[in-house]
Amino acid sequence: MARVEYPNVDSPDAQQMVEQIRKERGGRFPHLFHMQLYNPAIADGWLRLGSAVRFKSELDDATRELAICLVARTTGAEYEWRAHRRIALEHGFSEAALDGLLDWRSGEFDARQRAVLALAEQLTTNVAVDDATFKQASDQLSPRQMVELVTTVAYYNMVSRFLVGLQIDLE
Image (cartoon, rainbow, N blue to C red; front, side, top):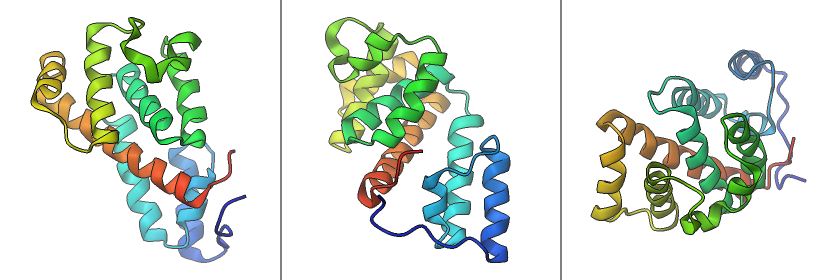
């Protein structure tokens, strides 16, 4: 059970955001967004950034989902893990690879994927990324994709901290 009761969404501002969330999330109204509706402006900003990260990026879907899954596992965000593990499977990752994601150096992933995972891991655990790790990733990705990768990792760290901090219920 969430640490804070989910807000009432009967107000016109909240209802407008509920409809926007459903529109942008395939008819769904996830608990993550429901909790944010204590302040519809936060939900709006969060939705816009999340939509840009997920749907308006040059970073390919598989790379994005791999980074998100590492953030979810590293931060212990089960809600995020369940949602994005399913998407990562749809993008061709094996269950074994995802289940062993925290041991990503084991040889399950190619050089590009390892470079992305190294960057995601350092951003999540240290915030700072060392020059060698950044170079490895930037050798694999365009400058725009690097910005999108860092934004993706940063955004999903925010998501994780919100989910875990408030103990948002699984869907």
